[in-house]
Amino acid sequence: METAQSRSRSRQQATRPGAVSAFARFVVCGGGVGLASSFAVGALAAWIPWVLANALVTAVSTLLATELHARFTFGAGGRASRRQHAQSAGSAVAAYAVTCMAMLALRQLVETPDPVLEQVAYLSASAFAGVARFAVLRLVVFARNHSQAADALRGPRTLPATVARTAAPANSAELCRAA
Image (cartoon, rainbow, N blue to C red; front, side, top):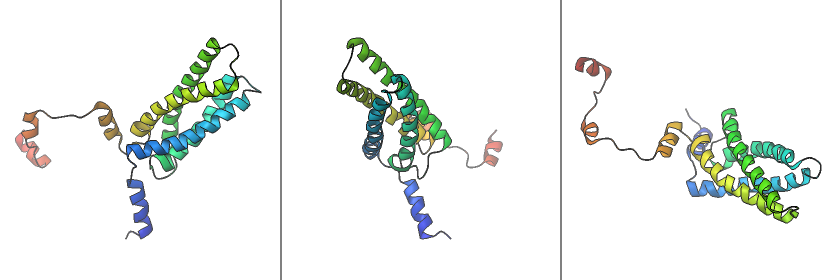
């Protein structure tokens, strides 16, 4: 017999926020972590090379953000699994590359950019990468059913009219007799 508490937990796990709600939560969680990361990268870069500071901060912030997204943003119902952390890390590597390229481009354009300009460049690149990460996390990493996620990526499918009208045998015995 199911208790009220377990029914409530099951309902919470089955409820997945809509795309707009999930994106708003993603912006709050991911944006908050990203903003803190921005300042952390700047502070660490005073002692170590910027690329290394960005790598360290990206690793730590990805772990934190993945947990927040699993628990709050995408309604996964608990802690992120190892698989989800690994998949999220893949999208973070892409985000790391985008932020590094943006900072390298900035340094090619401006010999010694001031810290405010660096923050603008870093946060702009992070926002661009964040939108792509949202799509990957929602459709792949935290998708309830991976076959549904794959269908969403492929787009709507329609069956040919002849297949749609043909009735399949009700059970395997009928299938064997039909052959």
